[in-house]
Image (cartoon, rainbow, N blue to C red):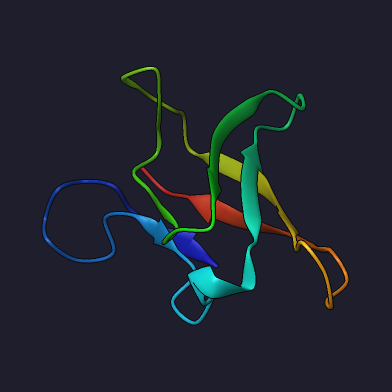
Length: 82
């Protein structure tokens, strides 16, 4: 539920380890103002806490997982710690 992108080699990115790319999911990450910061489809989730190369501030972020079919959407939050 939290990650620390401080380049120490531990917990440096936000991941969803058991989300199989074959499920066809699109994962989106938003800041608290609803701005889309990160989005991937049908691949591994690996957000480094940046947007257009700029480090994002510490805080709570929202994720939204949309599946092509067979599963309901999933939403939740996680914390970026600097």
